[in-house]
View 1 (cartoon, rainbow, N blue to C red):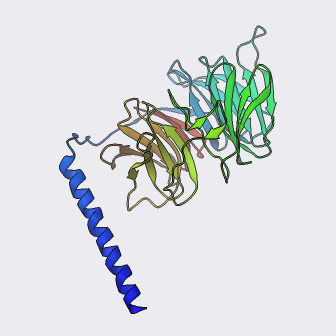
View 2 (view 1 turned 90 degrees about the vertical axis):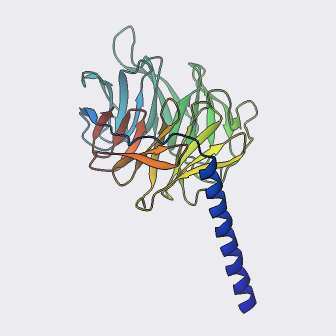
Length: 317
């Protein structure tokens, strides 16, 4: 037993020495200019929800955004003026995700009661109406993403993802390789880890030590970032088929709820359970900023904006 313990200790020391050599080699090759400290301020606070905000999304016009709350309301905002454009009462207060399409003319919501509603915000009558209801999942719906005006992809607590034909109101493909709740979806600009033509998983990445709550493709579509309850964000490369970097800090012990990249991909924004949004340098792996203004956990975020359980949306710049 003593010999085995000594061998294990020796191997551990050798592994640590190799890690140190790798770090030194990386530092020697690093020719990237370090980023200055990111100092962003709250430019707008959007007040109107009366309970926790579970989801938010920017419209393609970069002016309007939509938010969904446990108060049973869906609100479309003008981020410039902070005015409400639409306030829509929902049949359920448990809306966990939604998506705007075509500058908020079409929009999708998901409910924890396994239904996906397609709402049309602009109609000839001028009122909001349900255009389609999609139902096939047997667990709560956690995320949805438009592929086109006719297709949408959903994920669920039933361990599956589904591809839908919106006009027909039918499921066209199902993805079933996950072994736990599917919490997040991200669509690559030019490729998918799932092949939506066959429904088969083509790549699997490991590394996190707890539930993964968020995933987001890198702007060029060749990599993606993740956020987990293990208090780390990670960057994975599709071409190398491996993890490239970890974003952690000794003082961060809570989980990550959401992640988003800057347009260039140099910055990674991550929302945390400790009420903060941390900003990471994706190349250096260093924290370069902290956005601290919420009074409860940050539940969702998009570039330049985030949502929170304190019932407020804040726009940063």
